Image (cartoon, rainbow, N blue to C red; front, side, top):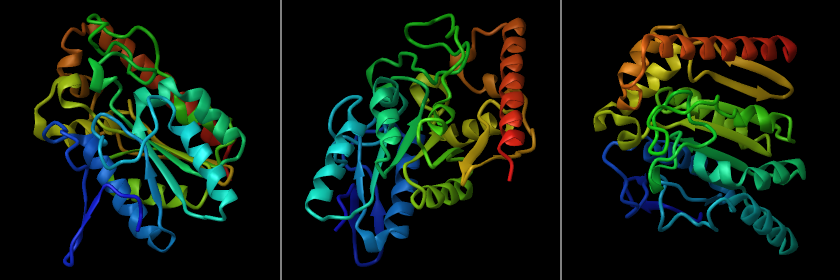
Length: 287
């Protein structure tokens, strides 16, 4: 049996985070359940192991090591499994706060060629401990320690790992489940691999509990959360039509309630810079 965060009945298998106490409508919980469903179904003959922890990901049945140490824990597990002749795929699922703290372990594990998939559910905050800013928090987003908004551009973890030994990196969103499924299946056959999933946080971002998918879709449609992947030496973007404006996206969340027109222009400039950078990568690493 897979190490699990899973209930199984004769009628169906229900993937869930048992007693993890998530907020109602938590997108991070949804992302975890989607990833687990895909992993357990696609790799069912290989008994996958799911490892990690995060705010909306789970705290009880999801196996874990400690804050910021999931990658070093996986390296130890893979080494021990090799000694014992055990071959089972490992998938780490955690949050952006964990990767911010444990980036050195992650980059080194990938650089050394350890074969596993690391999935980050990114809510752009240390949401389980006061909603402080992380390395992936968007510009000018209000956090508990930055009431006037974060001043710096975010780190782009997939691009950093693209040049740190990863065979596959991608961004995706729960608002685009078919894209998410395709990328998870691509990732588990190209290890080491890294996927970053946008998972808004109801209390940290400030929106109604039932609007998580709507906020995610606005992020993709306005361009502040671009979808892309690095696969087999080719960088490709998913060119999503711009059906929303940045102003519509920021208006959907209370963490941007302090923005002025000048602030909106600064964020639009950031989105353009990001778009230009990704376009250059797509041209430079084309088939």
